[in-house]
Length: 236
Image (cartoon, rainbow, N blue to C red):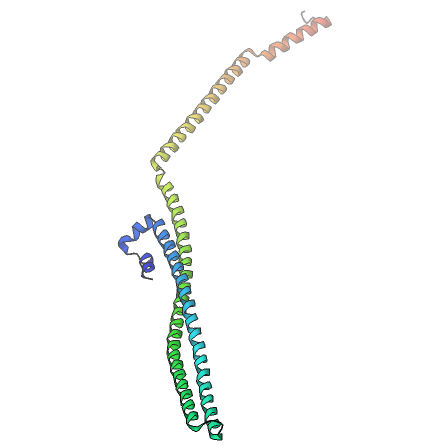
């Protein structure tokens, strides 16, 4: 687990480098998780093997227990048979003694299997604890990896935005705005000049019309023509 502590507890001197190369810790973490999964597979295999030995030891205990009880029963039956006279007394003692020896051997085997079973059960418990811890760590670091990847995306997006903002030339932007302002001002002045020219031309036409009084002249001509048609002569 020291491997991951080194990854997620990077010293202050290495922090900036890790941020600049964020893909490296991600790849390292992914590799670490793969290694942990490999360790989990090996631990599960070892656990299965040790459990098999523990089960075998348990079965052996039961087997030797049964043998011990069987030899005990046989010794008792032989002694009872010798006591009844169905078996020679000396032979009965010999056979009963052999049965008790076999019983003792079975007891010793049972004791040995019991000691081995206790050790195996301890190993099984330890392996189960290790397997559970590896599973929890895998889950933990997979969640850490998801968080790390999300942080990388956010930091990359933030960096790109900040980079774009930093690349904006404020002076050139202001200069462009000033040029646009000058252009607008120039267009406005040009429009005003054309307006003044139009107004000037219109004033001259009005002055000319007023001086000539075209309307009055036309009225005089029309009146004279009408009188002529009617034969009216105002001259006396």
